[in-house]
Image (tube, rainbow over all chains, first blue to last red):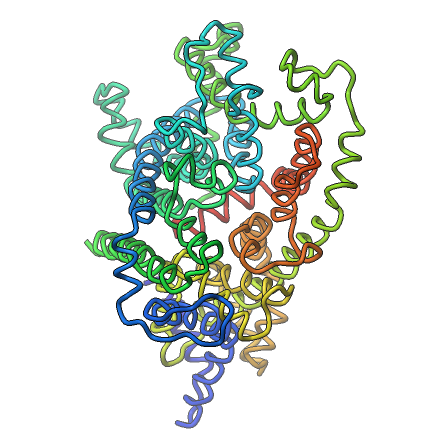
Length: 311
Length: 300
């Protein structure tokens, strides 16, 4: 809407009396876009198409020959226990990040929004983990969570909770929740920043009106904060889901998918299939299946939010 | 509009201050619910900071002290851990690589996305809405769906294991979101100056370079900060593309150092600490732009 209103006068300026000028106008527009089109075309759209083609071929990563194998890669992937384990595991990350991570993010944003001093300090600290790389996070937590020398078990011992000591990354039953907790530690600051910005955009008058009506804290949250935050909540939810589903580096550095395949995630499974097992064709089939799921998820979200903004 | 709300809040806060100013002591004391909030926030802050503080503490201990886990305060700070990490880990080389990749990638993203964002916000031409749709579509294609094929493409272009190939991938990855941020930035700017320049007969490219860009600094800063962090922390493509240690960015350097046999835990902690110094400094200096950029990229 707004862009159109702005465009009209500028268009009139560039509009020349002759018909030929509309060609010139189109040319100028596309020249401005040319670098972006070139890069996206070569390095995003072409590989995306090639990934689909490659999923019907066999390639060892070295030889120039890539024979067609029909649906063989897909048949292999459908029977691949590791891949499906990775899909189940990543759902755990998605659910944990979605409910726990976003819950913490929202609670902390509301808390920071309600204090008078130290807002900047807490905001700075809370987003700090988010600027670290997955490698740094992986290295730090692999030391902290180590069974014997790790500081977490040591701390539990010191406060008399030694019954809670675990082989955090080595025990099949505990490794997955542990890695999910590390993901949440790393990622909740992002949702927090967006929620905080959203809270600060809610008109104060709404709360004043609620106060006049004698609303308690819960009702203010339920009838003012929550509905007003809805657009932010939906974008944070989508971005958290996508980040959780694409988790790779943290897992690779922390556990490399182990013990067994208890923390295997799809991106790591694809990576190993290609660069460890040298089966690029079935790796491509995995990325088509998994990437396709993510694309459908995002497209769905885009469609829903488009409909909501139209309504 | 903004001015008037500012005035209103200013007025509100002065009246609030007046009504509270009489019992001065009470204003200082925290209400019970505030104490609860601060307690909660402090716990969260400690949780966020603990791994980093522990890293600093461990990086200054000797190995025996570190493994005994007796103390958080190093009895005698072992500064030589940092020297060992720097020399053995070749961190200077990796950091220089990362600075190069991040700098060039951000520059490239700024040029490409400001041109495209300006065209989408201000110019009128056939096929504009189609391109906007393509940008959105490309944004939702996730890395797991592409990294294999991107690697294969770079091989066929002779760009695998090369700086140029990696930088091109970084730039391409940043373009969609950066273009959308720049588009919404340009759309929110007044257009008087452009119109005046157009009436003077300046060409669109001339207007863009001499009128638009100098005024676009806030938008460019937001893009630069967000994309700078993303490029600095990129790991998957760096892992796939580079075989040659001399070309690897710091994230790769850190992992190859970690998986090597020689270094000890306290040295690795020192290396990790060194590796995050640039990004922490950058974060503390550019915080405002991070908040703006994340907000602009995600919400608008």
